[in-house]
Image 1 (spheres, rainbow, N blue to C red):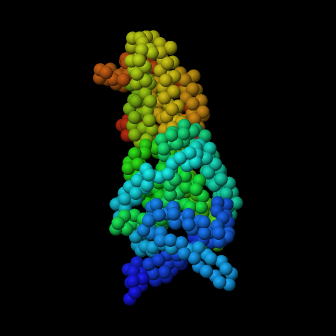
Image 2 (cartoon, rainbow, N blue to C red):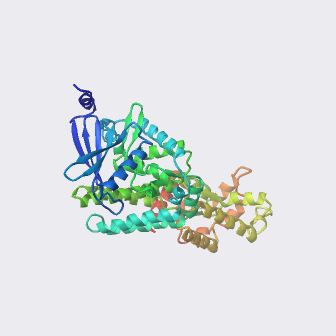
Image 3 (cartoon, rainbow, N blue to C red):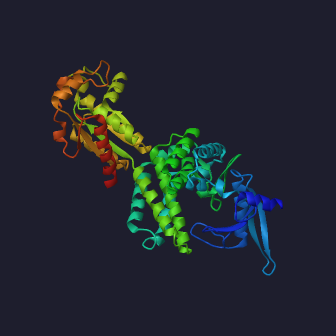
Length: 497
């Protein structure tokens, strides 16, 4: 038996096979794969002439040798003497389908180790990837917005026939909301060097887990600008695809491991935002394939759109106010809620101590509306609290404001901040019996953040009565129950806005 036949027997049966994508054909023969481009033009590529296909094949060879140097062998040509056309053919080493990441996931094989390897390869690749002004320009808020708008516009031809009009409208409004309020976040990603010449199309079908390490194939080659991406966007593509394969847990595992290895502290909202973007891109590809006659792709488009919407809802930046009088458990609730939903807590008590230490405010504690709690000092504390919140919100972090928030004007300032930063806003007011609140305050250890006294706790016991739009949380019950109730309201309120 010859080498090719013997290798093919070890690889996979049958000896030959043909796979079709929306842009080309892959012919498998023995231990070799031959890839040709379809002579098509779509909204995002043009392969109509042999010269254009030649350019793309040469570019694909060059780019894919970055992450799969042993797989991409060269560009050959199929001559047609009767027409004089030389059709370019990308020649690749064929790998066993059993080593394909998507196959391993579908078969339930353990893939934690391979995913850790893939995360390591990708993080190393991103560290050395090409950067520069042209690359960085694709990370600007305007470039990101343009990509979303282009994809949404290209999806309109499929609305009604393949995808639902209302779901597409939700995709458009939710993506626009995130982009509008996060310019500082996108600018910071550019400034931190997180925009690179990446892979651009990281799918589980195109990753082979081999003994020597993963080979990552088939990067996006037909449009350089679309390959210039945020590193977390590049990684999010595979996280999205693993979720599409029914293993959202593996997607989260991979993205967390990648972020650790890349020392990338991108907020959770940005990860969700890019997972949603990649799901929308794949939904568009599904729609194109459906129009090419693959009618089963309509179901895939719907599933990808579901993933996009789920993550667009998850990436909504929230601004919550947790108020109530001293001793009502607002700080305990704020911190427990933050742990559940991944938000940052800004405590007015801690802000007060910080600016008091700086000398910006002064006075004795323990008296309402005087000393440390004079109207001027209280205004300074809340002003600084909102300043810190604005920075976090515009950088993609959800925020929980922990304070009394008894003044209507200050709550209106919160609402204006939420509107200005395109964040979903929700109010909670903690309630506990007056005697319970006073007892909690009296039992606080020395040096705690709050300077409130039992007398102040009694004086501020009616905060909830003057805050009718807030969700009342009974903090006399176990904190797990209170935080769980608040977390449900946090999610449902943001979804309904």
